[in-house]
Image (cartoon, rainbow, N blue to C red; front, side, top):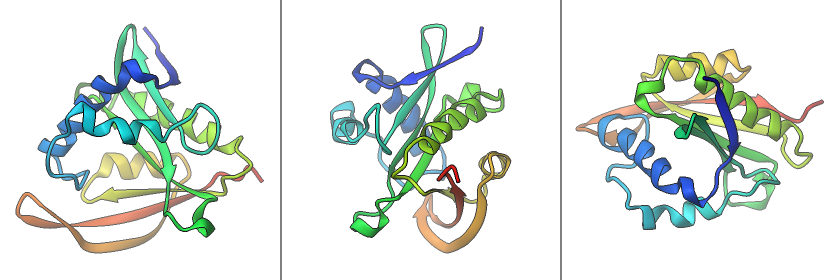
Length: 169
């Protein structure tokens, strides 16, 4: 059974929150510290569109959503509008099966078709060798580090930032 990738719709929100909450409560890879109720993630969900630079794609195996990749606003100031921040989260049971690469690649391909997007950025809380490897495999380049920028689970975490030219030029 192959991975089907499509634009997220409102029926997916519960599952996306479930996947994300695993990373909130069990890992340092996101700096949210409290799990979300579905209602609290509705505003986040509504920022995405099936056209334009702010996308939310889901990966399905059969009828089950196993992960998502998104691109959203990098910063709120207008001069940053040609840049997006990208993220990817998979059901922890599906990590390491190649699904993340397929999902992220499709997101990056969609961004490449957007004339208004020049760069994609990904922030990775360290250590996270799998995410670093995925970003590097997909052509992201490490551009900098924030040291001890996040405090979670009683310790400080560094974040490395990765950049990819998605302008298609």
